[in-house]
Image (cartoon, rainbow, N blue to C red; front, side):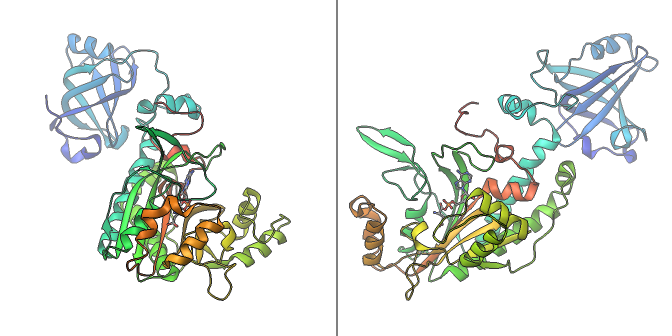
Length: 432
Ligand code: AMO
């Protein structure tokens, strides 16, 4: 037995041809004299039609015993059938149950009975049999692929940095401590320090696509404890170049998804719009005015609250940058303005009310970096090896981190970040 075709490869022009399909029993309808089985495979569904007039009683009995979600192989002849999905049906000649599914099912892949997200995540292998769910991951995969191609074409080299680390990088979010032999260590919150150290190597342009770990305690639709971060760092560059790279990458990835994932977007009912370049740029001070004008309190020097993000999202429809953030709410590695050090060269990329990326021109001057580490209440001694890279020829540089799941949410229209991760990790969930 060898599979010859996927469901989607069958059409009326193949009338009379013999094919072998393999997949799952999506549905079975037994009308006595005729049995209809819907066989579902990676891309589609084919109707297997078994009329007692045309096939042997033994074969009829074998088919009658099929159970929902069992894995089957069907060898048969194609016959044009305008009413069947895809315009064809297959009249079976031989069938084989490759593996029988237990009954009852923990959830119904035909979606006649809708399941809660927790039930779905518990049985993710079954949940993903729905084409409307696997579509999200095909889109995510296309997005990640297009990001890699885009960055490589721009001269970026893909790197891998450690996820077992000795110190914090981002203020604000908590670290996951782990036991590292006789010492304490942490799961990496961001490749920040490593991608910056790469700038001192002469490799100039690097990117990494890898997990980051955040011990965020809150339970929201936008946070997980493990996500994939798309990180880029560019030497001899400032925030303007970093922002331009980021907006072009976002634009390119959306264009690629629109071109290559038509069926998946349709499965999700998404009309994807390719955003126009350049993206609007708002200054932090303007954001305060907008938010306050919507009746939401936001003081200068505060990070955006959820209410502030929502108010902003009502005014700003697509992708946009927020620039000139106060230094006090940005991490130590962000370059302050020379003449007005309370302002920084940091930016966030937003989509409506959702932050999808942060970036900045970095501090490349050793002494200023030490000063900023201290002013954030951190100890420069724990950054010794990182700081050393700034003493022997560190070029000016800039970069950003783009959350792969939040970006996938923007493209697929998902409201819950859990929908965009195969096996999400949140405060309550560590399995499967
Ligand atoms: P930041 O902490 O803003 O910046 O993270 C960058 C982007 O990563 C995503 N992200 C998350 N997504 C879901 N759940 C989380 N818990 C979570 N944490 C982060 C978001 C966010 O915009 N080192 C800097 C980047 C840089 O300056 O290069 C950083 O990590 O989409």
